[in-house]
Image (cartoon, rainbow over all chains, first blue to last red):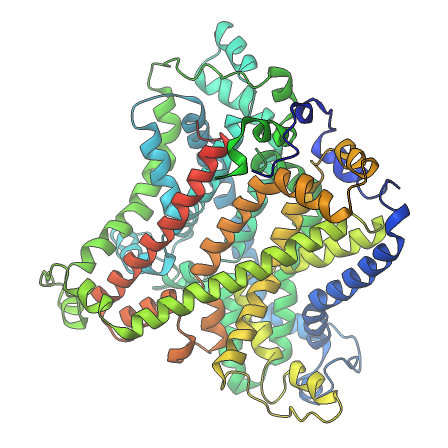
Length: 311
Length: 329
């Protein structure tokens, strides 16, 4: 309606790729001149906001180095008496966080890989092939997004029990993949749609098979979208709590708990044993890998997201 | 009705696509061609099987259960529970408590999404103006929050608002003339929901800000410069240039936020220590407590089915937007 921008000239404006644009953004002096005062305010506002954002994490980080008595002294932002890593060692060994950590890494690695493989194949087919039931299947996948996980817990328990996969990593990984697929397919289908058709057609003319076209042509072209959805899945699966609680039950399952379960365990038992510092150390250990993942892929997240979402 | 309708807007948001696509132009791709052979199906098969078995089957079970009357007795004996038709639904829908929960969930979703999107957008806009160092600092801070498991974030907030040792009480108590020692945040439902909303907004902003900031980089600088030359105020430029271009992305992240916040479970659950009081129940926790706390599995299923239907309403809105934008042909 009030659409002043939709002049035909808009699409003719050459824009750099998402990555390039995000790098050069904000450094340009274009708006600086007239909004100096505003920019000052902006800086202040942002720094305050960043502190509010990071404040709780700072508090956790400080608390993780403190002893129990220090935590309850009532000076939350006081520095700990000594920066010893003994709480971390306690968490790692005594509270079995080390084992759970490795379990989590293992499960998330495999299930994310599986999600991306199956999800991208399905999304590719749904986005690029016309066949009977195409749209219906797409909607079916997408409606999975609205399904509340906890209602699935009881049926899942029986399915896995019937298959003998209860308390096994295989069962958990399959469930993780199934529950990550709707979101993955939803985003990736949109992404595959946006890719050019010419190259694929050329490959068809040259006699490439469907499978080969997918792996050697489409996957590399969709790289940025794949990377950002991979990150979403890594984070989503790393953060899962309800699913492992139900699935990792039965004999021998206590060796196979995941990190989030371990944390819940500490916080439940902490009420009696007063191991709060261990809890905080475990929390920090949980965040660390995600920060590393983000650090590595930060640029792809930004570019991939835009390419997939802004249509 | 919508700006997105006009073909021109569709093109203006086009730079978000991959580079090559612009070379291709927007010519309708040859979708109609029929690829024969079984390979496409085979490619989709693993995903289909997994979803059908592990997501579809539980979903069907849930719907079936909502037409039965499954109580603890049937669960333990394994007998087929009696069929009761729509009884569970009439029971749920005629229950005032249920409607209170629906109202609360909708209100919470509306408020939390509104705040998150407004903040996320302002932060994304501000991020374009600050120097590189500050921006980097912000991105790192946001990554921290984004990477935090919901469970962990909720635990942190539970501790911060703890009545005896919480850092929030400690800080507020520092204000002159305010006594917040041992103040309990969950006695008054407004304050309690304030804490929950804070948590959800706090955890939700990074996704929104980073996504929208990425979208902002797609706004052609030339347009903004032209507007400035023509004497547009920053506010006008924002309203008439930036927002229309960003609109599809805003729609998408808003709808995703609605879906996520509507299904609020973990945060309320952890903050209330696994026993949410009636005034802290959302649709998700209500369904869960009915099903597993009270062993009214069928009633809980009926509530969950209604929740899914409500959410699908939002999804339809979402998908219609995508149609408009021209994504789903």
